[in-house]
Length: 278
Image (cartoon, rainbow, N blue to C red; front, side, top):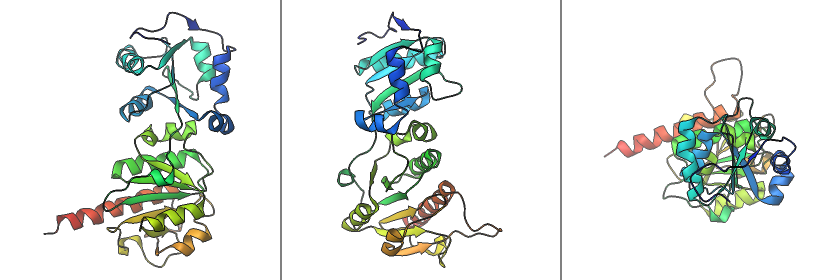
């Protein structure tokens, strides 16, 4: 383990090195779940994870790819947290990398997420529930929106993509570490929402009420569903209200990440109006 602020002297150059092969194996969810870790690639994503209090187990760094200013800023932070710094040559880093144009930073960290019962909520919570989302990019995009609007938590109901998916972390720009995220079977999520006294508002194109006519100032969970199937019957039956988006064109729905953004920003608008009243 490195104990100074300097880069390690030994550099792994072979793409066949066991540590590089281990990094590649973390692309498989089963391996990530077994080891309880995930991969954060990119200096921006790593910086945000560090800002959120994440202490990397290992950081794999390529001097030839990393910007000198970034190295100067990040290496001391990583080593101060006790993280092991492993130097990789360009070929070894390219083998381990998830990106087409890597920037020389890849960290192994504890997998994000807390149990449902450990989620903390404010006085007037706003929670985003995403059911059975398949595409990591969509989940990542929703996390960025959730971070921007200041939701209390994002909950994955019966998830297909896991919070530790490296592509999700990349799409979220690391915000998965800045937010409280949890997951569980849909039945458990519904029970948790009831225990927390949250109104369940399901976004669906079949709703007769548009979202601007739904009260989102109360403690509420906004629910969006899978890319093709939408929200399942369990959450639809549990819904206190359903809401659709105003659609003036020929299509009747938006991408799930776009839909979530519209509803969450409507909640922000309504809450700002409420706060401005005497």
